[in-house]
Length: 236
Image (cartoon, rainbow, N blue to C red; front, side, top):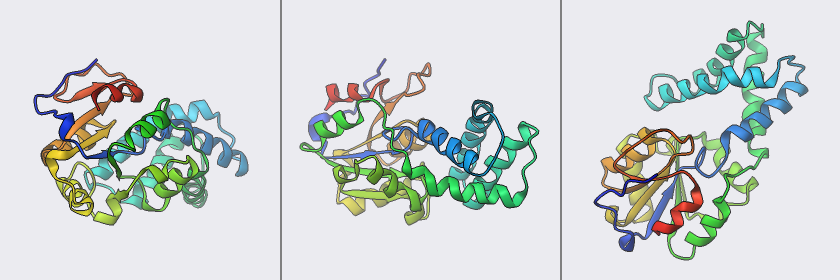
């Protein structure tokens, strides 16, 4: 499934900006492995699948609020766990929730599953383009994730929302990325899984886009759309 936007000119592209979580780095798989470890390590007696059934949509909800500057990072880290345990009627003290929030972030980069085709795509693109990351993920873990999954060396610049002070889709983070990389906007492409943050955000400043429809939603956006990372090769 794809819709080629009228302003997509692959012959002009010199800089490709990737989102990290849910685009290259398989967040849900690695997050599940992290919870499995920290729950066992801290004697949290819940069924992991049942917990994740509650946690995944709650986490997405809080990340949306975080992007919109409606909650702070500490609130996001605490409330996504608190609300998930509450939904399961499982009582956990605030002290333990704060501890779990910390050890979750500490251990998350230890897991390194990438989406199928990620390495093949980066191997294909890296000799032809300058590759960069633009991420809303937490500053203290994003580089560790990339080192653990052995993809850090593919990228020239890593731009995090915390380092810039604004989050995608705020156009300021894309403008900062363009300035930092000395990239012309008409020679720049954004690839990401979140339509609002990655695609609309990048299009606001005039960047070309490819939407990685990992969730296989029924979509028809003004962007190239791919269901598999490796399909990006046919456009670049």
